[in-house]
Image (cartoon, rainbow, N blue to C red; front, side):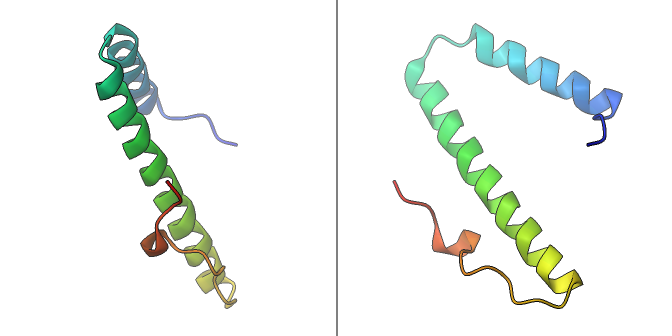
Length: 69
């Protein structure tokens, strides 16, 4: 896998420091849930895009179906 660009590494480091300095568990939970949903949506978009490029049927799960809570 390619290494992230320096600007992306800087952004990651800034966000990591913000997370480390947060002591509000509810805020951290909210951020974690948002990141989980974004990650799953990105995975779904990636799967669908790859399927389109290869002229295949996309997998049955899509971001619009949501995730179990």
